[in-house]
Length: 80
Image (cartoon, rainbow, N blue to C red; front, side, top):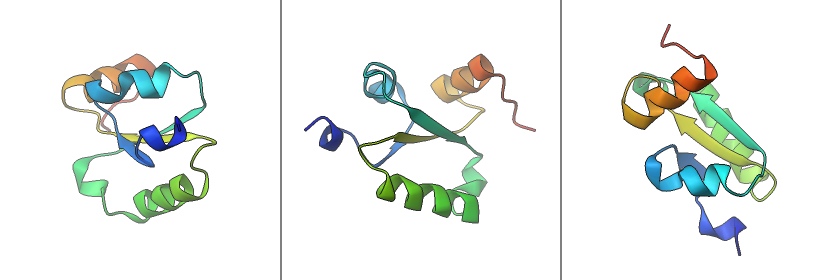
């Protein structure tokens, strides 16, 4: 049931902080710009999220705005 309570591919936001970090499950982030949302990397990431749902949490995040910028800063990722 917990697996079904979150989307297959999460757009990182304050709403999903608890489901992402609170369950102590592995999380894989793809940090990207808005322009990269339709890139081949994003498509492969989404495919992997579908194939591995329930095993790994997949989340995407920007790096320049709000909570997403804070995440990028925390893990040392810059827009460049």
